[in-house]
Amino acid sequence: MSELNGSAMIVQEPPAWMLERLGQVRKLAVSSAPIEATDVKAVWDRVHMDGAAALAGGGVVRAVVLGPDPETYEGVAMVFIEGGVPERVLVRGESIQGVHFERALYVALTQYRSIVGQPGGTLAPTADMRRVSPEVQTVQVDRSEERDEAVIPVDLSTLDNRNPIDAQIITALNGGVVLGEADVRIIRDEFARAAEFERRATRASSLGADPMNKGHSFPLGVGFTRMTKRASQSLDASVRRAGQAVKLYQRAERARNFALALLAGKGTRADAIRRRQMRSTTQELLIRELLGWVKGKSIMQLGVTRVNRDRDGYPVSFTIEGQGIVKGVSDKVDVVREFFAGNKLAFRSLVDRIRLSTAQCTVRVGVVDPSA
Image (cartoon, rainbow, N blue to C red; front, side, top):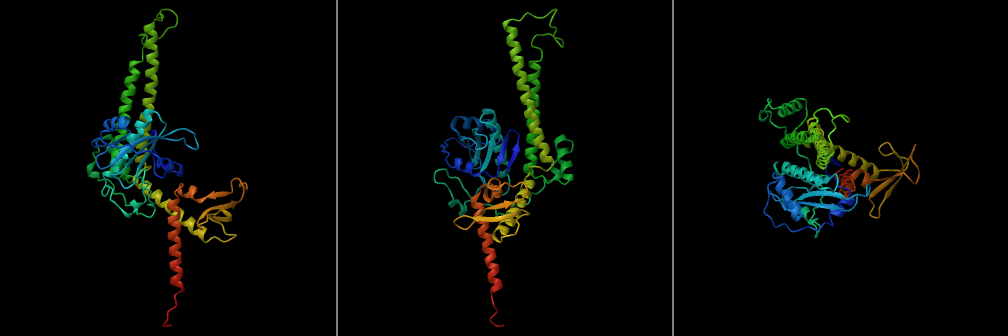
């Protein structure tokens, strides 16, 4: 699952191929002093020079280009932060262009600040640290059983209804949207970015609005200015600035739409917790049905003809039949890929937990009272 943020995506559940390639990333040494995550320019300059930068709070941010995406066959721009937070922050850029790397860095730093700023946001050593790749030092921990802390809505007394942005936040809160302090901070940042992009776009438009000094009219007959080298350069510059202005307006629109989506309750921390809980419920229901499947029984309203297990006995896939299902082509469902986003560790952990709870229930039911 990913959350769209302008031209970058926060990757919450990286697919197996991405985890594998991240595990092959060579970690460059970080020798610079920690930089505040709010100073995006300083962090970007350091990452651009060294490939990595130390952040205040114990994190280290890195920017890498991964091998081609299996679906698009294009290189993948990835910015990730490790250390200082319970889980690695992963952000995928729209492309491997520098501007998209910079955007991905901004999103990653914003996410990092929102986590570090919360109680308990600092990374604490746990027994799960043993699951660390020796080369990459990447923690691969199944956190599917961890309880999500409820999001505490921001205090209305900290908002100023005379401020247009705060007024929208207050309206959203009164409408039932749950917004935490981190959500409010991101909303303000995105609206500020939108305003800055619009300011730069307006300036670019005004600079190239009248390259031939003809005012609002541009006659192609009488009075047409003779095309000189300087006039040609002015026209070229005008076209270039117009293209820049369009891109800046588009970036402003994306930033504003993202903020408006948060105000509508989409992509907030509370929304992410709700979706994780729904996904967890679906996963548990599916595993219980797979473990208890018998021939002729459907699973999640699907006609199932077979449950396939690996050599360790885990139900890794099942075969379905029905209208529109082509035998041998689209009749097999990969449980780990389709329901666990390729996270085999989470899948096996849930299967083991359900098996253990089922076995314990069976033992309790089978116990005979000796005094009877």
